[in-house]
Length: 140
Image (cartoon, rainbow, N blue to C red; front, side):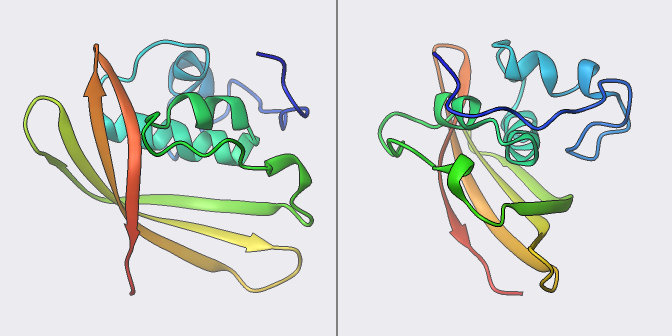
């Protein structure tokens, strides 16, 4: 699939954008290149990193087909959000093929104040691959 826009550059030796102290090359990059996520939390972290890197192709591919939008239009968001950090608050397995992950992602748009996205996301595993299904925005 051709990329609609250039990805944000990342130094593969620095800590991963998802907050894991491992370098990007050992953490989220293999998932972005097609390896299956070992858990719903790993998929959620890789999706956060994909938002940081503006990797719309990965975000759409890792979204379950039943709820996947046709486009996220990340390349046209102006100003683009600056993602500031991720805090995973809870990861609950709902059996072998279902899970939820609660997280808070901090971001800033333009020169504005930092904001928080607090979400409880639902994931399904099909044919050995985890997919993001949807999520509920939680109030703080």
